[in-house]
Image 1 (cartoon, rainbow, N blue to C red):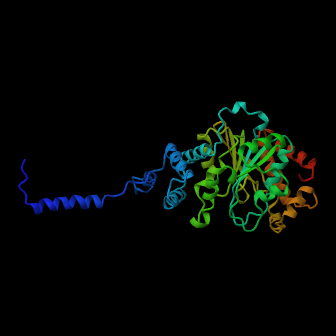
Image 2 (cartoon, rainbow, N blue to C red):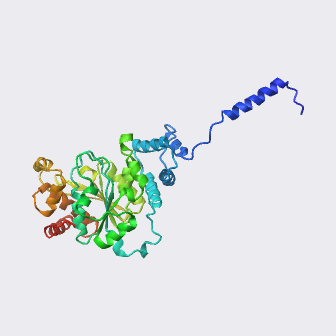
Image 3 (tube, rainbow, N blue to C red):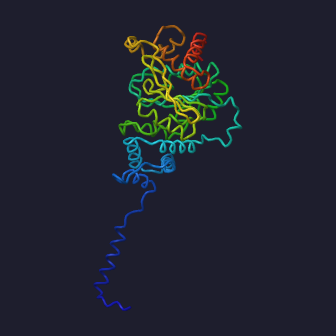
Length: 364
């Protein structure tokens, strides 16, 4: 067909095509699709599926997202609260990236398996002393191998978990394999977050910049790096109690117990009853543990020294701190119960009372 238009008209069309090429939008970033899922607006936005959360968080761990995308992703999850499916997907991404999954768990000697996983990721400004570390040490010295892992990023008036562990001369592992070796030889290991995956500690370190905790704080409590038979979790906000249990169920974790603990740690508060929210082989249940001390003693407890010297003196029996001892024994009783060493509350507390009285008071 003959084009009867003038040359000027044809030049105008050529110019328009050139303008379209010059104003063509750049190709969308691979991560942007996950953000669109979140931010499409009322009626169109939705949560990520477990598979989408796995892929998105895998990209984050590989440093394949831009800072603005990372901030948007973390803050949106924080704003509307992460779902169990999202948490499960992100946890699976961490386990794969950190190479925590073994090809054949059955080839690992039984003694390398911790009986109890005890995460420590509280980031409160005024945490105080980590009495639960002494609880875990008491268990490990009595046939309950314990893995602790964690990072305390925001302490301004207290002693962090790793500092306390160093003072007690307990082993600090440089890798998951080293932690397994420590479990086998000493019944206890502490695995710092920086030795699980450095990107995770970087993400937790964004809290001062974002002004809020992120879903990373939640997923790390459920990570169970060495696949212990049971896990003892502490949270600060009650709303997260059931989220942890539901996520654990999706991940088919055999047994977990979650409490609203002191400062967000798995530490039993002695001045009121504490509900242990449990997941046991897929079944959900609640076990109410009674208060250990009258509330009239709380003011005295709050005035106790927040020093390593006091912390160690309580273990050695050099000072009498009723509230601290109640926290230690009470938390240890919950740990023993979760580890399957006792079937009833009074049985667990009696067992721990005996272990406490007979403890070796030497450090290291």
